[in-house]
Length: 342
Image (cartoon, rainbow, N blue to C red; front, side):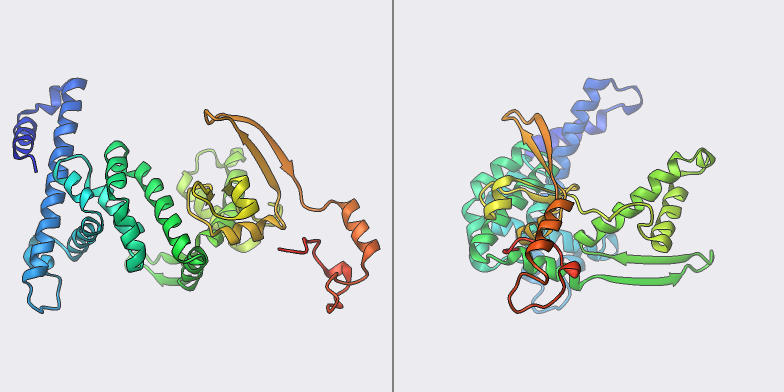
């Protein structure tokens, strides 16, 4: 830790007159503030590590005991997770001590390495120099995507079905709870969905919301209230008049054809990862829009590849009276047009 830099940052911040500061002074203050945040995050990590070493069999978290009334269990847990990230990748802990990365960068690594096996964690540790260099040159949000893809590649090598296992784990956590808020009498509903189900549900809600916002009669109604109405409309009318619920998945051609590779992209439009096998299954019935991207990242053109059209379905009906599988007698009119291999 550069004690001089920390002392200078603290001294500089104390002297800032924020009410009269110009842009340059605010930029300097922001840099000093970032230095101090990195320092306090580093202190949290060291406190958590040493406190746990000294707790001598006490079941409670050692750092939580130190915090007492001045902190919370959440603070202690966050510090412990950051310490775990530093243990996995010591180079990131060194970068934190030098003020090159923030505590948020450690949070990113801790989140993506939480459920790794020892062998997978060892592979992450082998990429420590690379991870520290990338974290030091990118924001925490940009580092999030990089770390996610790196860890996903490592998990794929060790556990080819790890993305499917993660999707199944999320699906097992789906739940709905309902209660009445004390005092207001308002009804509260909490819905926890896996990412794919959430994407389908919100495609219907967003369609209702767009319709409500276009109605001049709703011009003066707050957006939050319109959103609530859209949720109710989605629950009571479903997709009536809104078309089929959508799941928008972004992927690359190589992944769609052959599966995961070193530069795979397979995610929802908000960046949430999707198992490659799930994406490939969706492709069987999906409207596929091929986006051709230039090396500089600009989009050249977009083409649409549709599911079997009416003429193709007629051809299939002429070829088969039942399902194409020799042991299936389901009438062709009750079958989906599909590839032989899903």
